[in-house]
Length: 501
Image (cartoon, rainbow, N blue to C red; front, side, top):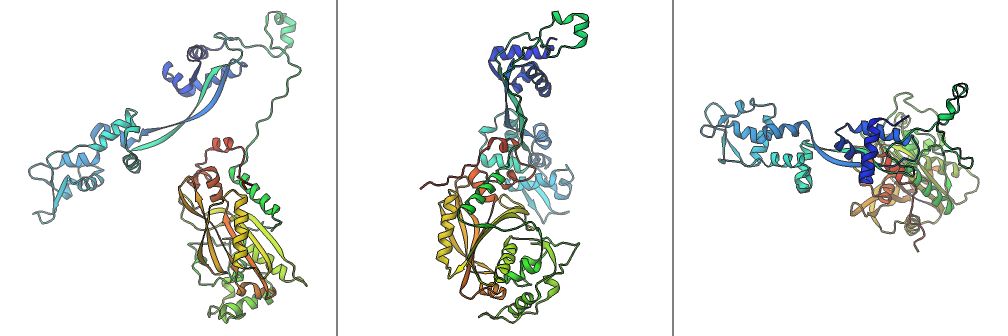
């Protein structure tokens, strides 16, 4: 069966251009792009007649509002033209001239085209300040329409985007080239010998596809690990290489007691507000606690102890019982350290965890409401801040992140505390990648740990190191509906520059 007429036209263009994009084919044949893609897919089914490579092309085009600028001019120009050159116009009447008069008036005032006499008879009156104007916004929109957006400076282009006059469009297409069996007239080869062919004898006139008994079966299409998961595996391997043991982190819902109170975080702390934490409605409260430990936590909060004066407030168990989506995996660390303290004899430990945490954050280029936290904890005798800095340098060097800075910080449950910064080559600036510190005695001693035992810990998100390693400058391009699946496919291997030295 011969390929359809559109397929033949595609083959002629491939023969002429050698390599041609389906977008260009659609333009030359004056056909819809999806029709061309369908024809190309039909040709691909015929064997090695053509070769294809999927590509993504980005271009800017006008929005519906931008198209209005082409026809009528910018909103500010329309407002200027509506104002009489001699008498001006009442502001109230001017606002009724078009649906976009308000924004047009604001832009015209900012451009210095108009002035307003607030003491005029009948109310504020708008008058022309200049005799003529140059409608720059319309000129820029015309350049975009003509394909000349590259001639528009970035600042002005961003203004057009901010005003929603232009939008970036991604078109996925195919580059088509000649295959091994390329020809301009292709017949579909028969692959099956049917009973009908045998009974009628038509098999003698058919062309059959040759059997290749040595050919391997077609590999099934497989998925690809997301960059976050690949970087997570690298982090996990680094922790294991450094002798750490992974903590169980399979409980996303945690009580306020383990998430806040056990960490010596006061009950009036802003982090406990609904604007920062997701609280659970059903079940609203946790019920099981180690009561002797709970009493010691209550005492150190309300009265002090272990060399601390505490917070001097009436500690409320109802507040501690509230369930929430954990805001950090440090709640798991608190459980593990309490469990360690119940052993008859203390022994040094190194724990780590990598799992999801949840915070009621405002979404921006570097923050999400749900993200992964990486945490490392070391408990041993007489650890100091110097030990923490040394471990952090070793840990991040294994990630290939050698440019580190530390900044003093405050955490309710660590003292001293440090924020960790790494240089982001894509953003060309220092980016906070983690927090660290030495756990306070008010947190450790109520658990029952020996007085000469110190615990150093650090935590960081999984997303920010991934952004640094993959050169992503907006977290919404890494997680969420804006993720480019082709990026997941192309970044098949996670290469952390380990072992540089």
